[in-house]
Image 1 (cartoon, rainbow, N blue to C red):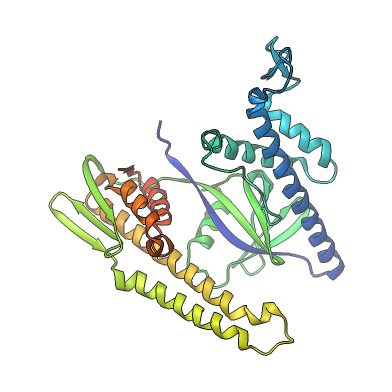
Image 2 (image 1 turned 90 degrees about the vertical axis):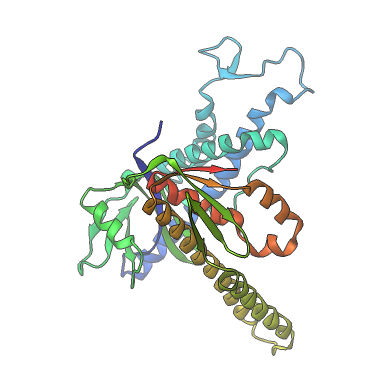
Length: 364
């Protein structure tokens, strides 16, 4: 059954709202401690879930060993002393209780089990390896932990998370972040389970908001047939109307130009004067890599938005991506296409925006 709401996540930079240097250092130390516990706990949970899933395949165990993953109190053949979902929470609680808030442990366990269940079939078929979490994993928490309030200037927002005060930094916000936060403040939007990410000493709030879907007058029998290609990123046919979004020169050539500039710098880097460290020498290369990433992400957002706007204008309730599976297989054989044409990223953005508008997407 289709829902009338969708969960959006916005990345918002935040600061610890404290002028006392010693207190601020203590807060950062506590945050890094939580991040370490979350990192270790995440790999524990995913490992235990995988072992439990494959327990029946441990053929080297004795024949009389029971291997049914069920609570013994509910099933005489069960081998667990609690529910399966609670088994990994007990692991987290055993190792980290008292060192980290239990709300974080609860949300970490729920998130990881959801991820494991989504990948379960791929693990069984051997199509995907077990997830391995890095040390920069976000710190999860429930939405009820965030209570927003306006700051003194009325431009940014303040909140307290587990007794640590934070302040948002929106700057010259050209997106919808400030509007969404203001709607959340007055109770029009609900905060869902979110997380806090630490990146090179900077703090980012990954705020998840439950939003109502936009109501458009769409007709299910009107089908928009979209084709993704290199010459024209998106070609849309709706009845007798044909629309072309973007072109090769606009997307691909500009991306290749950024790559060429980066390669020239890479070749010249060996002649840089030594003594200042590797990081300083490669700083310009990282800047071009980030520039390419930002350019591609911006273009994919623009193309997908234009596609959905066309579908809404033409009242198309169904969006069909034509021959997409075959094109992806061909792209895997062409290294240039695989490197430069972001099929998967564009499809994900199309699906996300189509869901917001209430348009059903079919991938052929």
